Image (cartoon, rainbow, N blue to C red; front, side, top):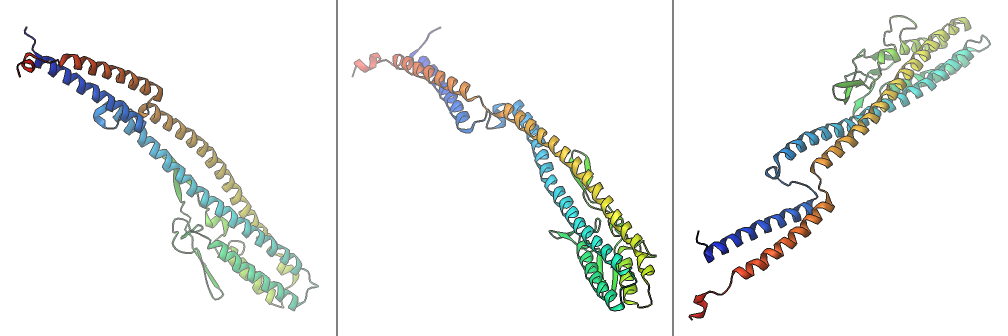
Length: 301
């Protein structure tokens, strides 16, 4: 086969072009820190990267959901703590008022304080986190307790507010208001606010004796017990959420490692490959300089 000068020159240029392409690839990998910068570089790596990135995105969303769950639970527990303190103060007042040595004016003064504490409990029941009422089940846009003069109306929405904290796992983050405030006001001991209103009315009634007032101690104790029970349940949920968060944190570390192993370059290897390619490229240029020698035409000018 006859080898001509043009064939040598064309082959040289082709190999030089491939050498430049390799140099460009290594330089791009060093500048971006990624093995591939477009799917055509390695379709398999690209497909795996999509799957790993989707998994990491889900984990990051779950971590944001944990913040929302903590927000609900911590605010609920803080509100119930204040409610417990208010009820304990009401209990102290009932103990005082059940003493028959108290006069009507003294019981009326106690009644006034109980009314103020009742208003405080209404405010606690209508606690908002952001723009959501946390004690009205899934109906977070309306207050669960409304006061119209001396009348108190309450909601009975006990539907659970659930947040997805892991793949397919939804955890309730709200408190069942019917367990906390006992919205059924049909009889004594069944409705917190109705009991408090009845207590204030009996304290204002001079005909009522200490024995009549003492009956409310059992009702108040039951409401305090209900609050403590709900807070204990809330604490148990908090412990579970913390365990789930630890697991999600571990999943995030694993997902980030898998993504990095799939896409990130080994800097030491790429630098070594780049230096090697530079040496090869310089050798190719040196060979090309020898191939492009003066021809006979250059001497016939």
